[in-house]
Image 1 (cartoon, rainbow, N blue to C red):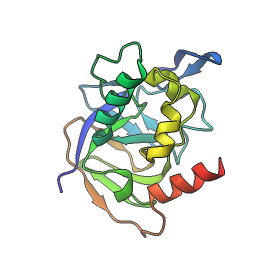
Image 2 (image 1 turned 60 degrees about the vertical axis):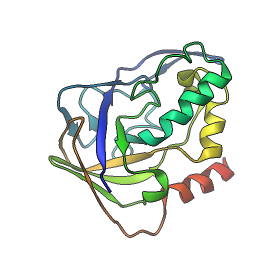
Image 3 (image 1 turned 90 degrees about the vertical axis):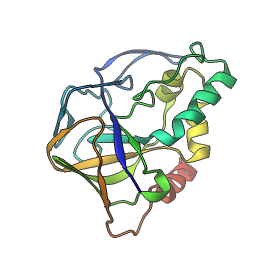
Image 4 (image 1 turned 135 degrees about the horizontal axis):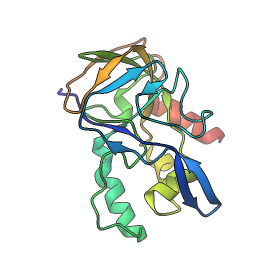
Length: 191
């Protein structure tokens, strides 16, 4: 199976309007054309507002499967999101890496994503919050992510280097004891 990095996305912390009021968030990401440096704490030029949910050594990078974008485009249209007619650009889910060829059911804690100049380790699933609703433009987005299990996953950096859109990557199996989908559903039931 061909696995590819479609987009490398970064963004600054900025104001985000939510039904709960304005909050600071780094969820708005945009694709970068050039190679992006990857350090132990994430991508060069990327910022996180709440380090309890994104950032640090185990959640340095957030990856999301491109295969789910058609779903989000459709449900945004059905929900009447203000800009629903526009195509969602990569990074719209808040991900740093938009991947092709690796979905949650195929990712396990400890798996390694090996890129030409960088290596990342699957660490845990993303748990959606109210900021995701604001980013998607409708208030049921987090609930739909929880129901579908299309959460994406966080990555730790095991070998710093750089990443560039278009690169192929190899998936090296870890211990295969806990899957991303399984862990996400378990945590969602508790929350």
